[in-house]
Image 1 (cartoon, rainbow, N blue to C red):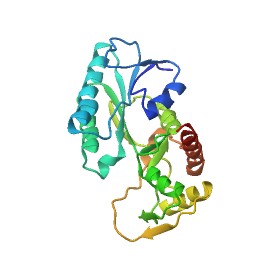
Image 2: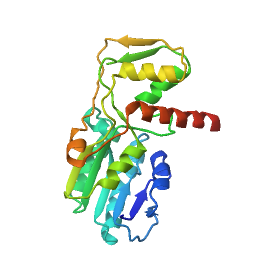
Image 3: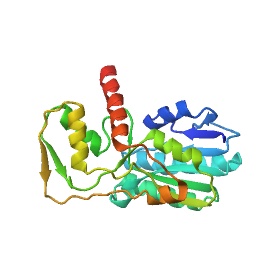
Image 4: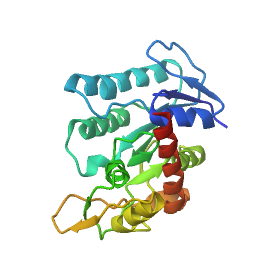
Length: 247
């Protein structure tokens, strides 16, 4: 098994991954050396001022690349974002620029474009916004409710993919998510039932941007096998429930 060094280990995703990766180092701004084989770059800011996002998502990334070169770490995994397909906000643009920077870095690079990750973060992502409505028994308006929805993923599915990736290509981009098994309406109905919500689900005909993520490349080329959608959502609901108890 390779040894990893992780940035962003104190974030929602990093705090989970660090429990499952035994042979690892931690990268912080003052870290000088490491004998790791793979740099796993999680650190990122999704909101804030121009300076905050650029400093975190671009300047910090370049420092990580230089650290790899100085320590002869040749392999680099970058957590990018599916939102680059639909959004032109600063966060999405910073992720796209990060991908371009890594392509010129001379490292062996895996770019994983990710949707909302199912963690104890109860604020970011469409499912979190919907869950807040359901938990408060408020009317829940769905746009594109009849379309297959898979814009989310569990940390365990990401880890499974990473653990089996062999860096056969110099630079690779892969989209990851759960399978597109259910429509958004079916998923929201499932969540409503599981938490015994009294919300009314309203299907709107108003047009909004929408993305069903294709994971055919991950499945065909890398034998990616994500867990079932309902199983992952049930696990996520337990995490959210624990978070509410703590708060």
